[in-house]
Length: 160
Image (cartoon, rainbow, N blue to C red; front, side, top):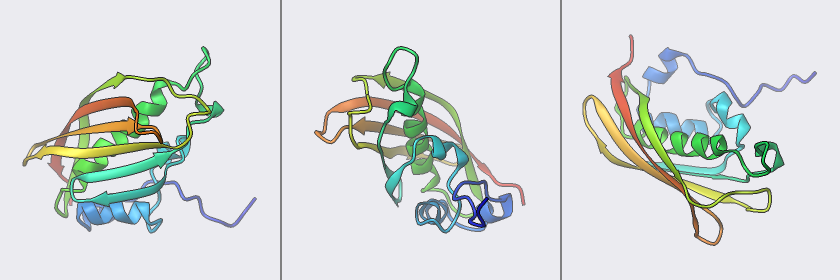
């Protein structure tokens, strides 16, 4: 047993509502707030956030394999949904939140434990008072497209 706190967790609604979306995302990436527990499954690193734009890097490994011997589509889904959602979140004012309403993924090339570092880039297409749309792409270190996705997110006021 260690005394070190886990880098993964969920912040309280009060903390979430206390800052702009961009500040919130940047604090997660800087380690000042815990990373969402789902990210423990993909181990992102070198994450950056600007208004409407998020980049995550990750390395697929054998632990991400499905029963037929390739990286499970859920690995790409976690990365793409996270990049798109956080890109939308990065545009929201203090006191606002979002949730994914739907997303569509297209798988272009498979990934394996030899794929090396993959880059997931999420970009906002539009954010309004009630909905936001975004797109994301996963590319390998040669710039080849591995998967891409689009999303629609519901934007809402956080409870006070």
